[in-house]
Image 1 (cartoon, rainbow, N blue to C red):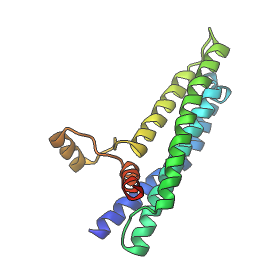
Image 2 (image 1 turned 45 degrees about the vertical axis):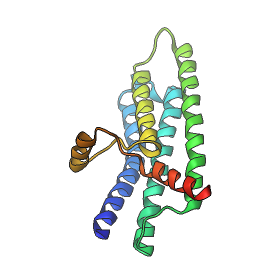
Image 3 (image 1 turned 90 degrees about the vertical axis):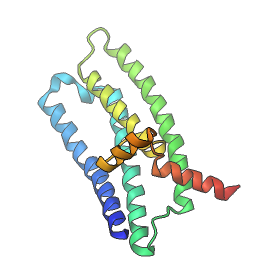
Length: 174
């Protein structure tokens, strides 16, 4: 059981870390190969991209901490200090999400009427970042095959691990 959980946490940690690393050169290559997209000229691209990378970094650190605790202390319970920091990051993430909407409006005004197609790609990056935010801080959105079977059976999304940590801490504080 411990080994299965350890493998799962290592998979989550390494997957998030790989995404952070690979997205940077990918964005560069796309911008280089398709300069007419004008990605790097869009403020909304930068804010959306940084939001996504910031969320992935939070996920990487979260899964790493859980993995490290499991290996060193035989449990993967997130320390209270980390959960409080995650709660503060949740608020910061929501602020950045709102700021990104404002930056999109700015780009729309700036580039109208000749809106670059890169704005559409940027919008999808933004949506992906919001889905990552929901996946980390509210409900689990990604499932493996057995998880999908459970989801179909229960017809209810699971709370995210961070959300469970928030609820655990809330119980301890009152």
